[in-house]
Image 1 (cartoon, helix red, strand yellow):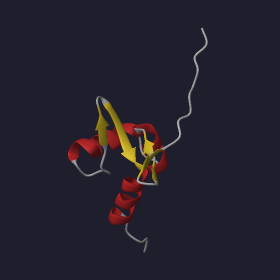
Image 2: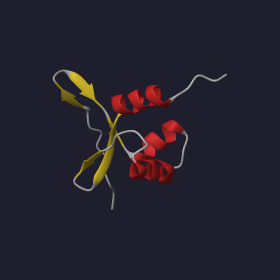
Image 3: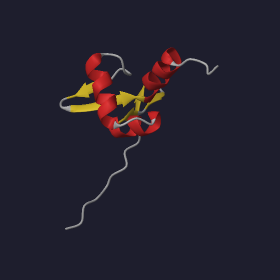
Image 4: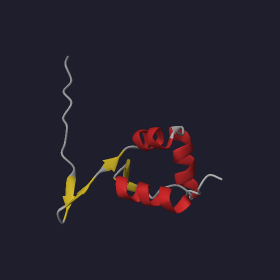
Length: 75
């Protein structure tokens, strides 16, 4: 049995592309384990997540904003 993978174009919000990422994609981007990201979400200290039914997604722009807000310059 062959499974097909569909690639969906990003949804748009008034002309601006909205890119939703999975927990695994954001964890890879931040170089942390997916469990760490889930723990941060549970504790309310990670990037804001969206829950669509039972599926968790992250808006790329929200993750970038969270990185900018929480990052510190290296000394």
